[in-house]
Structures are given as C-alpha cells and as structure tokens.
Amino acid sequence: MEKRVIFKGVWLPLLLIAPQMLITAVFFFYPAGQAVWQSLFIPDPFGLSMQYVGLGNFEYLLSDPYYRASFLTTAIFSTLVTLVSMGLALYLAVLADRLIKGSGTYRTLLIWPYAVAPAVAGVLWMFMFNTRVGVITWYLGQLGYDWNHVLNGTEAMGLVVIASAWGRISYNFLFFLAGLQSIPRSVIEAAAIDGAGFWTRFRTIVFPLLSPTTFFLLVVNIVYAFFETFGVIHTITAGGPQQSTTILVYKVYADGFVGQDLGSSAAQSVILLLVVGALTVLQFKYVERKVHY
Amino acid sequence: MADRHTGMVEKRGAGHWLTHAGLILGVLFIFFPIWLAFVASTITQPEIVHPPMPLLPGDQFLENYAKALVSGVNAPVARMLANSAVMAIGIALGKIVISILSAFAIVYFRFPGRKLFFWLIFVTLMLPVEVRIVPTYEVAARFDMLNSYQGLILPLIASATATFLFRQFFMTVPDELAEAARVDGAGPMRFFVDILLPMSRTNMAALFVILFIYGWNQYLWPLLITTDPEMNTIVMGIKQMFPSGDDIADWPVIMATSILAMIPPVIVVISMQKLFIRGLVDSEK
Image 1 (cartoon, rainbow over the protein chains, first blue to last red):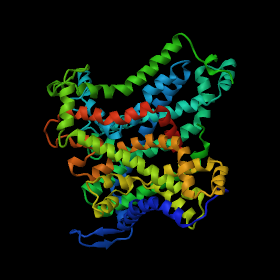
Image 2 (spheres, rainbow over the protein chains, first blue to last red):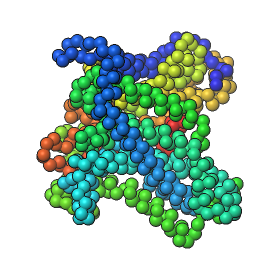
Image 3 (cartoon, rainbow over the protein chains, first blue to last red):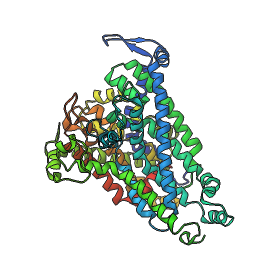
C-alpha cells in the first residue's frame, strides 16, 4: 500500500526518522552485533584480551548438559504456561459468552491482572507458597503434604508455571471472548435446532471457528513464556533448585551477569536471536491476517 | 442477525447458575493472591511469621504503608514509585513521539533508504532486551547511563509496534486532506501538526495506556542498570527488599510495596478500559 499524495523533500523525512534510527542503531543493532562478535571469542582468564575461537562457544554450549537441560526446561515451562493460561482463559471466556447479562462485569473483573507485572505476580505466589510463612504451604502441611519448592524441582516448576500463567489469563480471556462473540449466533442456533448439545456444538463449530484466535494466542503466549517471564523466575526461584527452573533467558542473565562468562552468554544471545527471529516470522507470516477480531 | 440476547442457546435455570459459579471461581482464583497480599500489608510481622496468617485485614494499614513509603527497606518506596512513574511515562511518550515521526516520514515522503529504514525498524521486533543483555548494558555503561533516568528510558523507546500502528492509521487518512493542505500551501509539518496529530489522538491515547503498563512493569533492564537503591523502580525494587541469607523478610512492608506497585497500572487499565482493549488489540495486529 502506498500513498498517492506525498510531500517533497529528502532531508525533512530523514530528520523525522533520525531519532528512531539513532536509538535503534545504538541500543539494538550495535549490541546485537556485539553479541554475534563476542560469541566468536573467549576472554583470557585476566580479561585482558580476547581469543578467537570461531564457533567454539557454540560447540561447547551445545555439548554442555546444563545448556541442553535449559532447552528442555524452557520447552516444558513454555508449553505448560501456554496450556494452563489458555485453557483457563478459554474456559472462562466460554462461560462469559453464555451469559445473557453481565459478561461485561466479569470482563472488568478478569482483565485487570494484565496490569500486574510478572515480577509482582512472582512475589505474590512466592508469598503464598513460602516454605516458612506461606498460607498455602501451611494448609498443605495440615493435609499432610510437605511443600518445599526450594528443594523440590518439580514443585518449583509448578509454582513458576502457575505464577506465570495466572497473570496471563486476562490477556487470553480478552481475545478468546472477542473471538467467541464474533461467531455468528445463527450458526450456533442452527446446530442447536438440529439437536446438537453444548459440547457437540463447541467441538464441531465453536472451536474450529475460534482456531485463528487460538493459533494467534499460541504464538503470543510462547513468546511471553520465553521472554517475559524472567521476573517470575528471578523473584521465585532464581533458576533453582539445581537449575530446574533455569529457562534460556534466565541462563543468559545468570551466565553473563552473575557468572561473567561473556563468550558463552553472547553465544546464548545469538541462539535466542534465532529463536525470536523464527517466532516473529511465524507470527507475521501465518498469523497476521488470519485472525478475526 | 437477531439480537443475541434473545437467542435460544443461552440457558436459564440450573445451567445459568453453574455458569455464574464457574466464573466466580475464576474471579476468586484471580483475586486470591492479591487479597492475601493486601491482608498481609495490614497486619503485623508476628502474625505473618507464625502461620497461618489471618485471612481478613488487620489494623496496621496506615503503619505499614507509611513505613514502606517513608523508609522502605533499602530506599523509600515513595522514591521508587516516582522512579517508576518517570520511567513509565518517559517510555510511553518517547515511543509515541519517535514512532509517530518515523511513521509520518515513511508514509508521506519518498526518500532514499525508506524501505531499508522500514525493515530496520521491523527487525527490532526480533531483538528484545532479554536477548542482548550484556552488550546493551555495556553500551549504557559507556554512555554513563547507569543509575540514571536516561538509562532507564532511552534503550527501551525504539518501537516497531507503535511505528506500524501509526503507519497503518496514516494509510487510512484520506489523501484529499494532504492534497488540500498542499494546495493551500501548507508545508508537511503544518499538515502534521494541524491535521494528522489531532486525528491521531485516540490512537495515541490507546497506545499510551499499553505502553505505560509496559514501561511500569519492566524488570530485567532496571535490575541491570540501577545498582543504587535510590534509582530502583518499584517493580524491581520489591525483590531487593528481601534480605540475603537467613534474616527474616519484613513481610508487611514488602506486601504493602507489592500492592503499591500494582495500583498505578491497575487504575490505568480499569479507568481506561475501552482505550486499553483497543490499544491491546491494535498493537497485536
């Protein structure tokens, strides 16, 4: 799409676009380039010089059991976060869509956790499940279950998944509800006249018609789980216990900032760049125009 | 299509109440963690560290919030709130300004490199802070931006999403308006300020709501570049309030801070619900 009517001039538009390009160059492209460059070197033990190692950092990373474990952790984590938050959101959206009155009220009640930062969500859930003072921990103890996510990797994973999914329900709910409300009533009523029950209607009509929304949310939620849940992990588990909740983004931070292993951190950044690139292409190529709002 | 409220698919009677019950369960699941945090922010430390803590608010509301705001743990929370406000508003306005200018340039001019610039902006979508942590930190350090507002704001204000949004909107503006402006001898900037900006008001407002929340909720970047507690933002400052080692956390103050950290963005979402939803849907298109 192009405008027919345009203004003349070359310097003015360059000036207008300059602030954006300046920020982009200095804080996006230069650092990304640096990451690629640094990933080809390792610093000597004193940090005085860099030694070129080609793809050595990558070879080392991909053979490192901790890094491979982190890949698996990320896959499990993002799958669970996506399923839990989308599942709950779809369930609530289907219910709200059935209401004759009041779906607006529930929408108001359900959407505002979107505004709660992942890091704050992390603190809230960590408080409830705190091993010393947590209310839920205490009640679980009364039931005879000894909750300890500080020592138990599975429980730690469960907690970061719930905390991450919790804050995301609002967003998914909003899109699912919009998707449901855009399905023509007449189609559903026709099926109802033919004797299809609620579940049959949902399976054969509603869910297929909702699939563009679902696919869009799937991609967006995976991106969220990959990159925006850092705050949840950092506040609740700091990647532990024994790296059982160290997702890829957390590992870049832990190795680069805490561990000061620059070559490895840079190589990890490059691998993540490829992941985001793939997800972005997926989102734009297959999602963009196929979603109905 | 018939009015959806008169359809036969909605149930009355038992099914109707089950629907409400299911939704209320969902609302409770959403509210419970926040309710607990609120209760914890109104009771005393001993009531929390000897579990189970009460499930109804106590009478320490003023004490705990005053203590948090005035002294906090490492820095007064009032100070962290102010830092967050500066950062969130700075990021939201910054992104809107530089994006609307670039969208104007891309849509209304033909200049060398136009396509290239457009793609360069697009590519930033693939470069979230999270994947270029160390080098971006090094750039900020070299510009002496650690522990500063510029450091909190500038690296985050490039925005492909906002640029695309304005570009899309400008494409729908009738060509006749620009034509008329040109015939009247108005320059491009005159057209931009007098016609385009006023027309973009709703878009800017919707975008502001989304970007304000985005900026307010930043965690990783402030964590990296603010080592001075006085420069901490409230969202990243909460974690810093936990003692290292075996000391017991000051739970009432920490929970009061968590509540304070949620209030501004939640107010923005609830009070500007229509703009919020519009911004959310637009910015994901």
